Image (cartoon, rainbow over all chains, first blue to last red; front, side):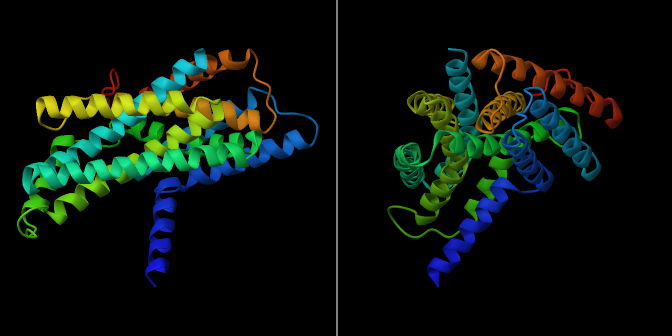
Amino acid sequence: MRIGSWLAAAGRFCYEFVVGDTPEIAVGVGVLIILAWVLSRGGGGVSAWLLPLAVAALLLGSLWRGRSAG
Amino acid sequence: MTGTVLIALTVFGASAVEMVEALTIVLASGFTRGWRSALEGAGAALVCLAAAVAICGPALVHYVPINTLRVVVGSLLLVLGLQWLRKAVLRASGYRSKHDEDASYRREVERLSGLPRSGAGRDATGFIISFKGVLLEGLEVVMIVLTLGLSSGRLGIAVVAAAAAVLVVGGAGVAVSRQLREVPENAMKLGVGLMLVTFGTFWGGEGVGVRWPGADVALLGLLAFYGALAWAAAKWLSRSAGGASVAGPA
C-alpha cells in the first residue's frame, strides 16, 4: 500500500517535472525527435538547419500560448 | 574546449539558480525551527543527491548505447531548456511576475512559525522541510549534471561545476545570513535555458543522425541563434504587453 502511494507520488513528480503546465513542449519535442529519427532512417538524413528551426517554431508557439494564458 | 566551457557554465548556472531557491527554504527553516535540524536536513538531502549521481552515472554509461543516451538526453534537455526559456521570456516581457525570493521567504517563515515543535533537541519539521526543499530543487540539478555530463563524456566536470555552485551559493548565504534576493534569477534562468536548448538540439540531432557543420563549434552558432530568437521574442511580446521593459531581464 505504502509502495503504491510512493510510486504514485513519483509518477506525479515525473509528470510535473517533464510536462507541468506546458504539455505542448513535451509533446512537441517528442514529435520532433521521432520525425527526425524517421527521416534519418529513411536514408535522406536530417539537415542541420531543420532541427533548430523546428525548435524555434515550438518555442514561439509555446510563448504565444503562454501569452494568452497570462 | 568549447563544449567543456559551455557545459561547466551551464551546470554552474543551473545549480546556482536551484540552490538560491533551496537556500531560501533552508534559511526560513533555520531561523524558525533551529539551525541544527535545518542544516542536518540540507546535508542529508545533498548526500542523497550525490548518491543518485554516483549510482546512476556509471550505470547509464555502461548499459545504455551512446546514441540512445543522446536522443533521450537531448529530448530531456530540450524540454527542460524550453520550459526555462519560455518562463524567462514571459517574465522579461511582463506577461509573468518575476520570482520574488523575499516573498517566498516570508511565506515560508510564516508557515513554519505556526507549526508545533516536536520537543527538545532535533526538530523533525525543520529537518523534513529543509530536506525536502534541497532534495526537490536538487533533483533538477542532478538531471542536468547527468544528462550534460554523460552525453559529453565529461561527468567529472559537470559534478565539479555543480559542487562549486552549491559552495558559492551556500557560502554567500552563510556570509550574508539571508536569502539572496539580489541574484538576477531571471537573467540566469534565461542564460541557462538558452544553453540547455542548445545542448538538447545538438545531442538530440547527433543521436538521430544530424551531422553538425564544424562539430563542437556548431554549439556557438546554435547558442547565438537561440539567443537572438529569445531577444526578438521578448521584444515582440513586450510590445504587445504594453511596453514593459525587456532591456535587462533580471
